[in-house]
Image (cartoon, rainbow, N blue to C red):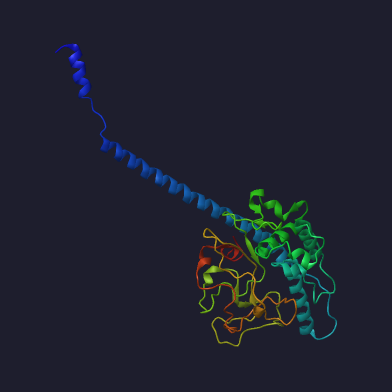
Length: 330
């Protein structure tokens, strides 16, 4: 066979990919790319969750330093009445200090004290900060309320508290990056943002958490801090509340141990935690109320149900300090 003919014959019999083979290869590559993208998305979600847990742990540590100080805080003493009467008066003043110095809503910053002889300096500091950020003329409620919206007031009060925590040259906000601070509702008041860009919420007295309304079903696994079977450490004599009359095991206290709740909505962005109880939830006769033990008589005051959650279950992916802190250890 001539040389040119042999070359042509070899060229025609050379192996090559068919169209079917090419399609199979493309399908395999697409599947591998999808798996990689799913893995990257999962890793991104885990990174956001890890960042949020770290933020909430830092906030918890900062707030607990101030919270624990109230057990030994000095206030103006009442000189009349027996020891229980004086202890009750002292406890009311401590609670009012907690309400004013650790606010979780606008009214805590604007409402003047009802049991203290003088206004705590932190209330004036908070008011000045709000005036500066909202460009208001002064802290008259009408002036501020036209700018400061209630949508994220719990998160914005948390920012004010962290801003007020000072240890030498270190400020509470120094523990957070600029990317972790934002103003999601555009009212000039800042919030600490979780890994998904949503405000981290603060509740000073989350009484009823994690009890679900209205059926009274419990999700006690949501909290390792609140303890209904132990008395309020700020009221060691039980002057404002003792054990309930309901026969339960273990015993349930009218005024149990409650800790501030710091929480993120998690990946679904749904909080499912009531942050602004209405007046019907206040178990106090004073105005503004300084009683952390809210009740709603339409549910079950005896078992303290009906305060924080509903039955939707949207809070099950929330990230909270009550989950992260176990027995005082992280």
